[in-house]
Image (cartoon, rainbow, N blue to C red; front, side, top):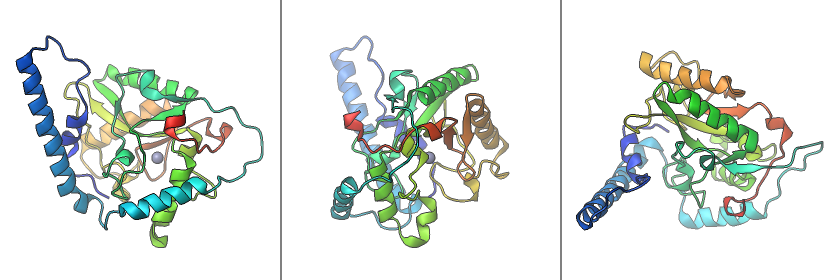
Length: 267
Ligand SMILES: [Zn+2]
Protein backbone atom coordinates (compact mmCIF):
# COMPACT_ATOMS: atom_id res chain seq x y z
CA UNK A 1 0.00 0.00 0.00
CA UNK A 2 2.51 2.40 -1.22
CA UNK A 3 2.13 6.09 -1.77
CA UNK A 4 3.80 7.25 -4.96
CA UNK A 5 4.81 10.69 -6.16
CA UNK A 6 1.24 11.75 -6.75
CA UNK A 7 0.64 13.87 -3.70
CA UNK A 8 0.79 17.03 -5.82
CA UNK A 9 -2.17 16.04 -7.95
CA UNK A 10 -4.32 15.57 -4.88
CA UNK A 11 -4.10 19.23 -4.03
CA UNK A 12 -5.73 20.14 -7.31
CA UNK A 13 -8.94 18.96 -5.70
CA UNK A 14 -8.67 21.57 -2.97
CA UNK A 15 -10.51 24.65 -4.23
CA UNK A 16 -9.01 28.08 -3.65
CA UNK A 17 -10.37 29.53 -0.42
CA UNK A 18 -11.54 32.71 -2.18
CA UNK A 19 -11.34 34.27 -5.61
CA UNK A 20 -10.20 37.88 -5.61
CA UNK A 21 -10.89 40.44 -8.34
CA UNK A 22 -12.79 37.91 -10.46
CA UNK A 23 -13.47 38.87 -14.08
CA UNK A 24 -15.28 36.89 -16.79
CA UNK A 25 -11.94 35.97 -18.37
CA UNK A 26 -10.48 34.93 -15.06
CA UNK A 27 -13.57 32.82 -14.40
CA UNK A 28 -13.21 31.06 -17.78
CA UNK A 29 -9.54 30.45 -16.99
CA UNK A 30 -10.41 29.17 -13.54
CA UNK A 31 -13.03 26.80 -14.99
CA UNK A 32 -10.53 25.49 -17.56
CA UNK A 33 -7.88 25.04 -14.86
CA UNK A 34 -10.33 23.22 -12.58
CA UNK A 35 -11.42 20.94 -15.44
CA UNK A 36 -7.79 20.21 -16.33
CA UNK A 37 -7.01 19.60 -12.65
CA UNK A 38 -9.95 17.24 -12.28
CA UNK A 39 -8.94 15.32 -15.40
CA UNK A 40 -5.33 15.08 -14.19
CA UNK A 41 -6.54 13.88 -10.80
CA UNK A 42 -8.79 11.23 -12.35
CA UNK A 43 -6.06 10.05 -14.68
CA UNK A 44 -3.46 9.91 -11.94
CA UNK A 45 -5.87 8.08 -9.62
CA UNK A 46 -6.51 5.46 -12.32
CA UNK A 47 -2.82 5.13 -13.07
CA UNK A 48 -1.84 4.99 -9.41
CA UNK A 49 -4.35 2.52 -8.05
CA UNK A 50 -2.83 -0.77 -9.23
CA UNK A 51 0.63 -0.07 -7.81
CA UNK A 52 -0.38 1.67 -4.60
CA UNK A 53 -3.05 -0.77 -3.54
CA UNK A 54 -2.49 -4.21 -5.01
CA UNK A 55 -5.51 -6.41 -5.51
CA UNK A 56 -8.82 -5.72 -7.17
CA UNK A 57 -11.11 -2.88 -6.11
CA UNK A 58 -14.05 -3.91 -3.95
CA UNK A 59 -16.98 -4.18 -6.41
CA UNK A 60 -19.70 -1.57 -5.87
CA UNK A 61 -22.40 -4.23 -5.33
CA UNK A 62 -20.27 -5.95 -2.68
CA UNK A 63 -19.56 -2.61 -0.98
CA UNK A 64 -23.27 -1.74 -0.92
CA UNK A 65 -24.13 -5.12 0.59
CA UNK A 66 -21.40 -4.79 3.23
CA UNK A 67 -22.54 -1.26 4.07
CA UNK A 68 -26.15 -2.42 4.54
CA UNK A 69 -25.00 -5.33 6.76
CA UNK A 70 -22.62 -3.03 8.68
CA UNK A 71 -25.40 -0.58 9.46
CA UNK A 72 -27.46 -3.43 10.91
CA UNK A 73 -24.60 -4.76 13.06
CA UNK A 74 -24.44 -3.74 16.72
CA UNK A 75 -21.33 -2.26 18.39
CA UNK A 76 -19.95 -4.11 21.43
CA UNK A 77 -21.65 -3.42 24.75
CA UNK A 78 -19.29 -1.44 26.99
CA UNK A 79 -19.64 -1.38 30.75
CA UNK A 80 -18.41 1.50 32.88
CA UNK A 81 -18.54 5.28 33.06
CA UNK A 82 -17.96 7.37 29.95
CA UNK A 83 -18.03 11.04 29.04
CA UNK A 84 -20.75 12.23 26.69
CA UNK A 85 -19.62 12.36 23.06
CA UNK A 86 -18.87 15.90 21.84
CA UNK A 87 -17.67 15.37 18.29
CA UNK A 88 -16.68 18.53 16.42
CA UNK A 89 -15.61 19.00 12.83
CA UNK A 90 -11.97 19.95 13.30
CA UNK A 91 -11.65 22.40 10.39
CA UNK A 92 -14.43 24.54 11.88
CA UNK A 93 -12.02 25.36 14.72
CA UNK A 94 -9.16 26.24 12.35
CA UNK A 95 -9.73 26.55 8.59
CA UNK A 96 -5.96 26.45 7.93
CA UNK A 97 -6.04 22.70 8.60
CA UNK A 98 -6.04 20.75 5.32
CA UNK A 99 -7.97 17.57 4.57
CA UNK A 100 -7.15 14.59 2.41
CA UNK A 101 -9.77 12.03 3.45
CA UNK A 102 -8.81 9.00 1.35
CA UNK A 103 -11.69 6.86 2.63
CA UNK A 104 -14.13 9.26 0.97
CA UNK A 105 -12.75 8.34 -2.48
CA UNK A 106 -11.23 5.33 -4.27
CA UNK A 107 -7.67 6.11 -3.05
CA UNK A 108 -7.61 3.68 -0.11
CA UNK A 109 -6.89 0.01 0.55
CA UNK A 110 -10.38 -1.08 -0.55
CA UNK A 111 -10.09 1.12 -3.67
CA UNK A 112 -13.68 2.17 -3.14
CA UNK A 113 -15.27 5.13 -1.33
CA UNK A 114 -16.32 4.12 2.17
CA UNK A 115 -17.15 7.49 3.74
CA UNK A 116 -19.99 9.36 2.06
CA UNK A 117 -18.32 12.67 2.93
CA UNK A 118 -14.72 13.92 3.22
CA UNK A 119 -14.99 15.22 6.79
CA UNK A 120 -12.88 14.83 9.95
CA UNK A 121 -14.45 14.91 13.43
CA UNK A 122 -12.85 14.47 16.86
CA UNK A 123 -13.99 14.75 20.46
CA UNK A 124 -13.71 18.44 21.35
CA UNK A 125 -10.63 18.26 23.66
CA UNK A 126 -8.71 16.24 21.04
CA UNK A 127 -9.80 18.62 18.27
CA UNK A 128 -8.64 21.63 20.30
CA UNK A 129 -5.30 19.92 20.91
CA UNK A 130 -4.88 19.35 17.15
CA UNK A 131 -5.53 23.06 16.58
CA UNK A 132 -2.80 23.94 19.12
CA UNK A 133 -0.36 21.59 17.34
CA UNK A 134 -1.19 23.23 13.99
CA UNK A 135 -0.53 26.66 15.51
CA UNK A 136 2.79 25.55 17.01
CA UNK A 137 3.98 24.14 13.68
CA UNK A 138 3.10 27.32 11.76
CA UNK A 139 6.22 29.10 13.05
CA UNK A 140 8.29 26.32 11.49
CA UNK A 141 6.62 26.62 8.11
CA UNK A 142 4.20 23.69 8.36
CA UNK A 143 0.52 22.98 8.73
CA UNK A 144 -1.37 19.77 9.52
CA UNK A 145 -2.90 17.60 6.81
CA UNK A 146 -5.70 15.41 8.22
CA UNK A 147 -6.47 12.00 6.73
CA UNK A 148 -8.97 10.56 9.19
CA UNK A 149 -10.44 11.15 12.65
CA UNK A 150 -13.64 9.78 14.15
CA UNK A 151 -14.63 6.64 12.25
CA UNK A 152 -18.15 5.31 12.83
CA UNK A 153 -17.99 1.76 14.19
CA UNK A 154 -19.99 0.37 11.28
CA UNK A 155 -17.04 1.32 9.00
CA UNK A 156 -14.66 -0.68 11.22
CA UNK A 157 -17.07 -3.62 10.87
CA UNK A 158 -17.09 -3.10 7.09
CA UNK A 159 -13.25 -2.94 6.89
CA UNK A 160 -13.01 -6.20 8.86
CA UNK A 161 -15.53 -8.03 6.68
CA UNK A 162 -13.94 -6.75 3.45
CA UNK A 163 -10.43 -7.84 4.51
CA UNK A 164 -9.23 -11.41 3.92
CA UNK A 165 -8.29 -13.38 7.05
CA UNK A 166 -4.55 -13.27 6.41
CA UNK A 167 -4.55 -9.44 6.26
CA UNK A 168 -6.79 -8.75 9.23
CA UNK A 169 -3.84 -7.77 11.42
CA UNK A 170 -3.90 -4.46 9.51
CA UNK A 171 -7.47 -3.57 10.49
CA UNK A 172 -9.16 -3.16 13.88
CA UNK A 173 -11.35 -5.98 15.18
CA UNK A 174 -14.92 -4.67 15.49
CA UNK A 175 -15.36 -6.81 18.62
CA UNK A 176 -13.08 -4.38 20.46
CA UNK A 177 -13.38 -1.39 18.12
CA UNK A 178 -10.77 1.14 17.11
CA UNK A 179 -9.72 4.29 18.95
CA UNK A 180 -10.95 6.07 15.83
CA UNK A 181 -14.43 4.82 16.81
CA UNK A 182 -14.10 6.75 20.09
CA UNK A 183 -13.30 10.00 18.26
CA UNK A 184 -9.89 10.17 19.92
CA UNK A 185 -7.54 8.97 17.16
CA UNK A 186 -6.28 11.05 14.28
CA UNK A 187 -4.32 10.12 11.15
CA UNK A 188 -2.34 13.09 9.89
CA UNK A 189 0.80 14.45 8.29
CA UNK A 190 2.43 17.80 7.54
CA UNK A 191 2.03 20.14 4.59
CA UNK A 192 4.40 22.89 3.56
CA UNK A 193 2.83 26.32 4.15
CA UNK A 194 4.70 27.83 1.17
CA UNK A 195 3.80 25.23 -1.46
CA UNK A 196 0.66 23.70 0.07
CA UNK A 197 2.11 20.26 -0.70
CA UNK A 198 2.27 17.22 1.57
CA UNK A 199 5.69 16.87 3.19
CA UNK A 200 7.49 13.63 2.20
CA UNK A 201 7.74 11.11 5.05
CA UNK A 202 9.68 7.81 5.24
CA UNK A 203 6.52 6.01 4.05
CA UNK A 204 3.16 6.97 2.62
CA UNK A 205 -0.03 7.09 4.70
CA UNK A 206 -1.64 3.66 5.08
CA UNK A 207 1.48 1.96 3.80
CA UNK A 208 1.69 -1.15 5.95
CA UNK A 209 5.41 -1.88 5.88
CA UNK A 210 8.40 -1.47 8.19
CA UNK A 211 8.89 2.02 6.71
CA UNK A 212 5.71 3.11 8.45
CA UNK A 213 7.21 2.41 11.89
CA UNK A 214 7.69 5.70 13.81
CA UNK A 215 11.28 4.70 14.66
CA UNK A 216 12.20 3.42 11.19
CA UNK A 217 15.76 4.54 10.50
CA UNK A 218 15.63 4.43 6.71
CA UNK A 219 14.42 7.07 4.30
CA UNK A 220 16.19 10.41 3.94
CA UNK A 221 17.30 12.56 6.88
CA UNK A 222 14.73 15.19 5.78
CA UNK A 223 11.92 12.62 5.80
CA UNK A 224 12.86 11.39 9.27
CA UNK A 225 13.19 14.95 10.56
CA UNK A 226 9.68 15.80 9.29
CA UNK A 227 8.22 12.66 10.88
CA UNK A 228 9.97 13.39 14.17
CA UNK A 229 8.90 17.06 14.14
CA UNK A 230 5.28 15.95 13.79
CA UNK A 231 5.72 13.50 16.66
CA UNK A 232 7.33 16.03 19.00
CA UNK A 233 4.57 18.56 18.30
CA UNK A 234 1.80 15.96 18.82
CA UNK A 235 3.34 14.54 22.02
CA UNK A 236 3.53 18.06 23.47
CA UNK A 237 -0.29 18.18 23.28
CA UNK A 238 -1.05 14.78 24.82
CA UNK A 239 -1.02 12.48 21.80
CA UNK A 240 0.79 9.15 21.55
CA UNK A 241 2.03 7.76 18.26
CA UNK A 242 0.99 4.27 17.17
CA UNK A 243 3.76 1.62 17.26
CA UNK A 244 3.34 0.70 13.58
CA UNK A 245 2.05 3.87 11.93
CA UNK A 246 3.85 7.24 12.10
CA UNK A 247 0.61 8.99 10.99
CA UNK A 248 -1.71 7.58 13.71
CA UNK A 249 -2.02 9.35 17.08
CA UNK A 250 -4.25 8.56 20.07
CA UNK A 251 -5.40 11.33 22.37
CA UNK A 252 -4.67 10.73 26.07
CA UNK A 253 -8.37 10.63 27.08
CA UNK A 254 -9.45 7.98 24.56
CA UNK A 255 -10.56 5.59 27.31
CA UNK A 256 -13.10 8.15 28.52
CA UNK A 257 -15.26 7.91 25.40
CA UNK A 258 -17.52 5.15 24.16
CA UNK A 259 -17.35 3.50 20.76
CA UNK A 260 -19.66 5.51 18.49
CA UNK A 261 -21.33 4.54 15.25
CA UNK A 262 -23.27 7.70 14.37
CA UNK A 263 -22.77 8.74 10.74
CA UNK A 264 -21.11 12.05 9.75
CA UNK A 265 -24.32 13.45 8.34
CA UNK A 266 -26.03 12.99 11.72
CA UNK A 267 -23.37 14.84 13.71
ZN1 LIG B 1 -5.41 5.65 12.39
